[in-house]
Length: 367
Image 1 (cartoon, helix red, strand yellow):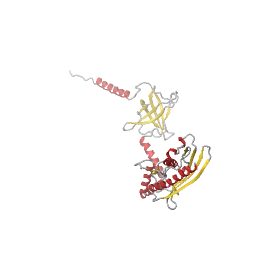
Image 2 (image 1 turned 180 degrees about the horizontal axis):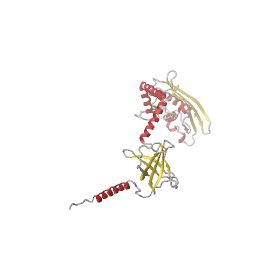
Image 3 (image 1 turned 135 degrees about the horizontal axis):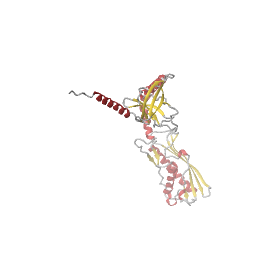
Image 4 (image 1 turned 30 degrees about the vertical axis):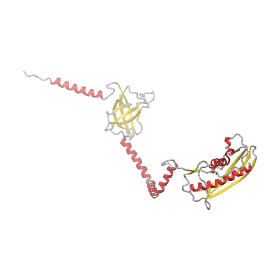
């Protein structure tokens, strides 16, 4: 007897399997499965490139539904209306932000919902407004930006052309003055302490020694305070009259500021004459009997005619009651062999030697 195949049973089984597969795929692609759904209308101002019915709806990055309908708004050609169906448990609020995101390498568009702080649900207001420009892709944003840049360049073509021409003129000027620029940069580097350190050369004065035998000693205690001087003379640099920078003098310094150097070498001069009765600094004494007050009037290189080292001092002997015992001006000049730091220091040394002897002899006679 011939066996009859159960075609009806086989067909039914195949149809059931197909329905089960479609149902499983539908459940897999929808977070809410077949549970309760809520429908919202979304309005986009502008294009939504690539958005299709069935596209995913994400809430804070999690899939909660899909797009069920898309259409154009008849009353506004720029508006796109979309209907989304999301799981009823999705916390959509009236201030929930709506945007469009592009995922994957191919840039598949999905509707993205973000939080919201309002406690009022969107059930009463079922229409959500997308943010302006929400449908703009990165490509569109780049195109719009380039379009704006192109418009700005077109509007400012003349000024840009002038600017480029000025830059060319400036660069040509720099090229012509490269040597001067190198000198300026080297000077700045030197001024700020950069580059190789520059060795400073210091010069000192010599206290005279050849006074011969002591003929008269100083009675009482004599003190020599630090000489007074205007601010210009409170320096270690060699000064010029008229004031001017001369090559080679930038790195030449006195061993101390001019007033302190004169004080130290005058005390040395008195010590070389009679160390037992030599004066001290005011800070080393309580109340001296007499003070030798010095005011520095000149200590400079005069280059008006023949270069000379000029020293001018004003001296006063004042007792402990503030009475002036004697006063006198001392001026000495010494021609320079050549205008350089070493030659200038030698000339100052010789002029100071004569000044120191004159002050010492005058003090001994007056005190």
